Image (tube, rainbow, N blue to C red; front, side, top):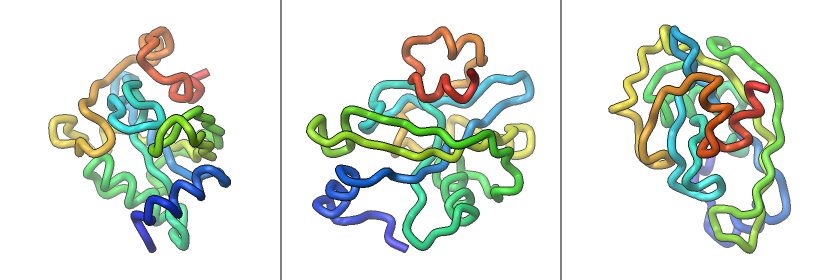
Length: 154
């Protein structure tokens, strides 16, 4: 399983095919959702749910476990999440700039914070600069929360 592809190959893939990813909608006991402020394109500067792409030859279950650990620092299996649906995310840009668009097919799962006790202060800063808990009503009205995140709740 290859985590990082050489940039020329990965840019060709992004330019010509959709990427498959898993987003983790983490809810706490009072119904707030964990969001991180994105550092990288696409969606740079917006608040977004943790997630990541599925690698070639990686099962969805393996990807879920890896993404939960990499993004949230928890050991979680796919059967501990609740599948909420498949979504398509289209972006005008990519990690390589404005000249390549990005298309994701996203498998969205809900996880409940009470099972894992996620500490926002210890979360990685690779994809998100900071984290916060936000109510669903508040995030739906917040222009700094990306539209694709709002789709999970409408």
